[in-house]
Length: 233
Image (cartoon, rainbow, N blue to C red; front, side, top):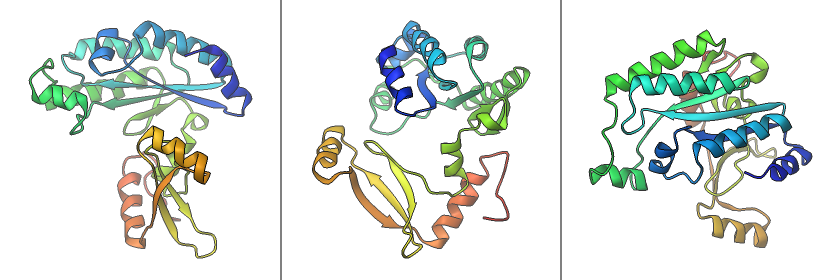
């Protein structure tokens, strides 16, 4: 990541940056199909922290061949250099993805067992707490209320949010009818850019959201958070 790009983002008004680092282990990054290395991740993080007041990044655990001790060491390293927020997700193998295809062909190191992954999750919570991070959502940690991701918070609390970019989902309210609407961005980047140039936006479709669907989402997402489900909702 070029520092000039980061400065341009900041100049454009972006005040918080989230980096998809996912691992500081270059071999694991290659296995996950990522283009960057562990060294490049550290470089990007260093420059981002010099430009933005708020910088967060994410890590993935329960990776193929990963042990509990290896994850604990990587986690402590991450917490030593993290800012006021950090996201940590357990690896999920999605069908039809390159990683899933490698797994089904037996070309990946063994995945941690369910119990081992659970141990990694518990250690993540415990170690992050020792570094003064509050576990405010299943996969998210913050040192203060001000550091909580406002965008993700809108997901969990049933608020409106814009989905910008290829494949992005959004949730909006039609101010004339008060109808809640779910938006879907075109999945393929080239088609998305063509739509933006010809139509002014890259939406593939919009569908109304029923009251029952909204209630179900609010319950499911609310249960992911320490805040729970507010009575006002």
